[in-house]
Image 1 (spheres, helix red, strand yellow):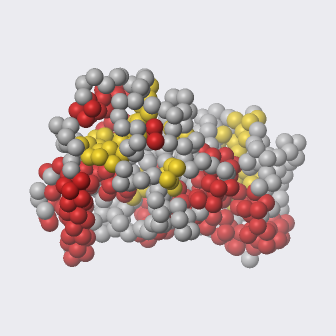
Image 2 (tube, rainbow, N blue to C red; image 1 turned 90 degrees about the vertical axis):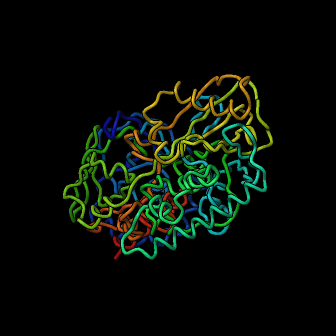
Amino acid sequence: MPYWAGAKKFSPLHPTTSYFSPMHRRHFLKNTTLATLAFWSALASCSQARDPQIETAVSGGEADVIVVGAGMAGLTAARQLQDAGLAVLVLEGRDRLGGRIWTDRSLGVPMDMGASWIHGPDGNNPITPLARGANAKLFVTDDDSVILYDTEGNAISDRDLVASEEEYEELLERVAAYGERQERDLSVAAAIQRVDPTALNNPLLRYHLTSFLEFDAGGPLEQLSAWYWDQDEAFPGKEVLFPDGYDAVINYLARDLPIYLEQGVETIRYDQSGVTITTNQGEFTANAAVITLPLGVLQAGTVEFDPGLPNGMRQAMGRLKMGMVNKVALTYPRVFWDESLQYWGYTDPDRGKYSYFLNARTFSSAHGLMTFGLGNYGLKMEGQGDEVIAADVQQTLKRIFGGNIPEPEQILVSRWMADPWARGSYSYAAVGSRPADFNALGASVGDVLFFAGEHTIAKYRGTVHGAYLSGERAAKELLKVWSD
């Protein structure tokens, strides 16, 4: 499928007001200079906005700034720019908001099939105040509330689990030290093979390497850079879930923004006079644009840039990769597991195959579980049907809880690599890449195109807070450049 579809719209505050009237460049510059002064009051002014309304989309329009993408990065940039006084227009290819924040309610309860956690809610994580502003219900998780099972269904003792965690940390230190001594980058898997050839045959080490390293980094060990897989930063604090759905913060950011859904971007033409974006619905023009297309979509080339993007950006784009993390959510007629336990793990011989389970019952009324396909297995499961996936998950659960467990009533599966609007879960540092590649993808082009997204910020790549901060950065850079 291409990166587009039909047409819907979230309307601005007053649908009869023209938010897309042409604006001369000089007039734009004057207004932007004044808008910069209002930029820092963005959050305060947000609270006065009204909820959006769905309307039929127009076939084209004009604005000061077009934002491509209604995920976290795009909505953050649009929110900041509109609150600074600019006429903003958001184009989104999907039939919903949020991008890779996807709260699905088809099972009767909210299931976050993309982003789930606020990673490190303390310190300066911007998602925490955003969640508070949205009055979102939050649930603090406990990573110690976990039991790990072997393939015979036996629980691993706390002593053995702690010992394996220490062995895992020591292995990573040896991998990092080995990688630093090499003249050329190599994969984490290759480095592991050099420092401990037996590590990947150890069930407990294999569990940690997939459930934590591959899950956190996004990519398989065979493609993760031994030099840079962990060259990012994190905020402190226990991770937090959204019992009622992560989309609470998306809807909060989106209120009163003019957002046109099902607008598949085909071509982005730009020069010093501005930008023209052609979708399957029509043509939109502006003085500047913020582009938040995911890395996988940029790599696929389904959106044409005219002229093409600079060589440096394209080279950086080619060195990075998109992750292969997928989720399986299941609901059951009754609970057959410990309702108080938040997580459990399983040492499957097939690395990445449903090794980690989240108990939705601890924060929801649902008799629900969520498990994960990670790394190469996350990609493999995308070619399987829901029935095959459900049978595989059941096989794992029966080994842990016995053969008398009920069959699932409903199942929901993400397939992010096959999703034409994402083409992967989140970016990671592949062999041969470097941290500067992420930042290179966040550079502006000709003072007309500004880029944002989790793949454009090396420090916080692959996270929702990284996407937010990149959208904020793009908005600030646009205001600064166009007010000079």
